Length: 313
Image (cartoon, rainbow, N blue to C red; front, side, top):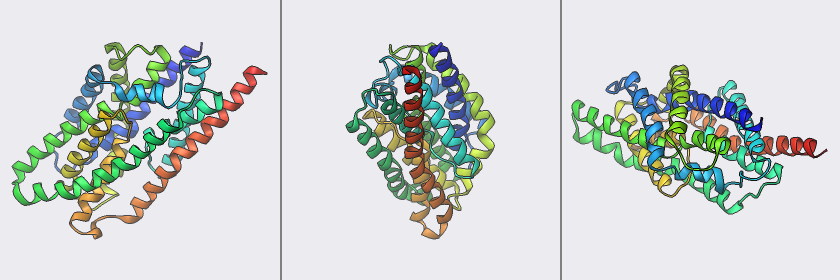
């Protein structure tokens, strides 16, 4: 019964990931429509299905390094963690404060693991948090440099080529890192034996459903609210975020692609004058990020502690 419930929750989590992440990944290029939404969604979904067959190191980090979920009660704790993450993201989104589902699930898994009494590695949790903070900063710095290249030395056709390359890099980076949070939940539900095609294909299909539903709203939020952007800003943000997130994936550290893209947009905007950055929206989103992990961690801990107490009683 625990397995069935967790599989259903894992499917819901993959759909919500599509709603939350898919549109945001397409949003940076909306002012340069070289990659059409249908083509972008197809490329993103294919990468989510295929890349984890080559490397699923980040999924393993979610499954084994934050807490040990292959112990008795691990599936129940995971279910609680995912539901806690979804609840926090839903509340913040309803209040107009879009946030990172990756931060939420890291907090939920850590909190639920502690609440259920599972072994939790403080060192690994701290390392994941450090990489999570660093990724958008690195993305911003890289974009600050890269935005000068397409602006200064390329034609409109050249900028389109940069956009195609940046979008491809971004989709690979998402599938190698942030997107593997969906795979991790299925791995806990169905077993820890790697990432077979059946897992990754199911994740990709559910992610596609969520992306199709959430594209309009997510695209507006990231593509228009942070900066008064030009096409070159989106291209620089794609390239910078892709590089930053792939670097973290190589270390097996889960980070948020949307956070890295946001950092890239801000860095690109600041390179041509801080007045382009809409600081009120930036601070609002930053505050939501800062709240997400502790809120999901606390909720996961409280629910896991309560449910475990009831089962023991």
